[in-house]
Structure formats: C-alpha cells, structure tokens
Image (tube, rainbow, N blue to C red; front, side, top):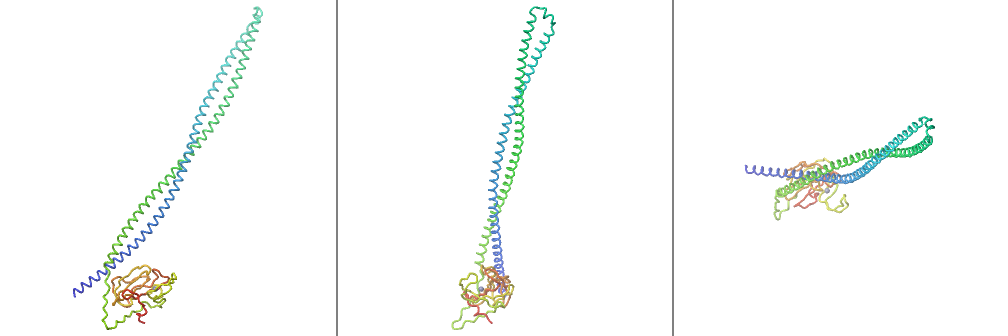
Length: 388
Ligand SMILES: [Zn+2]
C-alpha cells in the first residue's frame, strides 16, 4: 500500500515536473520571439541613425566649407583695410605737407609785402632827392613784383595739390568706411557659420552617442537570444529524455478478436470535413486529411473522447493549441486549433471530461475542432471509432 502510494506520488510529481518544464519551454520560446522582434527594431533604428549620421557628415562638411570661405573673405578684407589705412596715412601726410608749404608761402609773401610797403613808406622826397633813388626803387618794385608773382603761382600750384590730396584722402576714407562695414558684416557671417558648424557637430555627436547606445543594447539582446537558445535546447533535451512512457499495449491473444475500441464524440457539432484525401481549402493542394473537422463556435467545450493520460498540451505548429491523450491498447486521440487548453501534461482524464475549448489557433480559417484518432501512431478514420 505504502509502496503504491509512493509510486503514485512519484509518478504525479514527475508529471508535474514535466508539465512545468513544458511551460518553461513555452515561456522561453515567447521570450525568444520577443527578443528577436526587439533586435529587428534595434537594427532598423541603427540603420536609420547611420543614414542620419551620413547626412549630418555632409551637412558638417558644407558648414565647414562655408566657414572657411567667409573666414578667407574676412581676412582678405582685413588685409585691404590695412592697405587703405596706410594709404590714408600717406595721403594725410601729403595733405599736411601741402598745408605747411602753403603756410610757408604765405609767410614769405607777407614778409615781401611788408617789405614793399615799408619801402613805399619811405619819404617820396628822399627818393626824388637822392640821385638814382627812383630808379633803384622802381627796380626794387619790379623785383618784388616778380617775387610776389612767383609766390602767387607757387601758392596756386600748392593749393591745387592740396585740393587733389584732400579729394584723394576723402576717397580713401570712404573706401575705408566701406571696408570696415564689409569686415563687420563678414565677422558676423563668420560667427554665424561657426555657430552652424558647432550646432551640426553637436547634433552629430548626439546621434553618434545614440548609435553607441543602440549597438550596446543590440549586443545585449544578441547575448540574451544566445542564452535563451541554450536554455531552450537544454529543456528540450530534458523533455526528450523524460517523455512519459506510453501505456503498455496488451498483446492480442492469438485466436481472440481484438476488442473493438469506441470513442465518444469530442464536441456536440456537425462534421465539416472527413478523413481522407481532400483539396486543402487553404492552398488548393490535394492532401491527406488525418482526422475529421467539427465546425463549432469558438469557446465550445472539447471533451476527452476516452479516458487516458494527457501526453501533450501546448502549441504544435500549424495545429495551434493542441492536446494529445494516450489511451489503452496503443490508441491516442488528438484535438487541434483550440482557443484554450484546460488539461495539463501527465493529467489523467475521464471520458467526457472537458479538456479544451474550440478555437481558430494555428493554420485554420474558421473556429473548428480537428480531431484525430491514432493507432500505434498511425491516423485511422475516427468515424469508425466514434459511438453514435
Ligand atoms: Zn482537420
């Protein structure tokens, strides 16, 4: 009795462990597909940022070119300005020189005039009384006149020179003002160009940092996917090694007829597709239909067709959510496309016990139950086994 209890406990605990491992595997598969989706998203973001960076590089090159151009123009203008300053200085010097020269001429002129008046102030009588004095005075007057004429001529010449120098100086001053304004404008442009370069460089640095983050995250996800794959393999190997043994098939006694197995209808619904060759409605290809389909609305309870042990309860590719029950005598029944599974691997179920609900999971066009009966693993026509 105790031994039996221990065996039952051992059996059920092992079944629990198996079911737990199956659930763990399903969770890992889910985590794997989540990680894959995330990785794909990250790769998309990565290439978008790379494209942005290429554009920013071009923009940066253009901004730098513009800065260099403005800088050169500003330097050229500064050089011209320095040149003009020198010219202004020279012109000013020449102007001042002519002004000084004019003053000098005026001084000489005035002195001569004074001398002339002083001579003219001499007593006229003296001139008349002193022999030769008149001649001398006329000579002196002529001499002064010539000198004064020379003074006037020189004054006019230097005056014209001064006026020309003044005009030149005014022109140079105007040019200097123009160049100063140009330099101010270019300095401003240069500052703007520098700001543009700085801005683009900053944006580029930000995007680059984002890229580094994405790459780091990506390699993290890749690592996670690797680890999940390793875990998945480990659990699959465990599940393979710990598969529940099929119930023993009693050897048919020679001479006696094999007991006729009957299964209960798994769902109260009409049959919409029979066992055998048929045109697959999904792709119009002739395929062997290994079971019968019951058309039933989603959520309709699916009942165990016979008593037995649940050996599979989970997702099976195109079958969607599926349950397989192992019965006596090498028979098993399969229930596919469920919306919900209500039994666990290792669980013992009785005939008519609700094990799942009808759904549309896996490759299926409408809610239905795909039901199979297998004998020794080979599908047989369920209609031959179903009781009315
Ligand atoms: Zn089917």
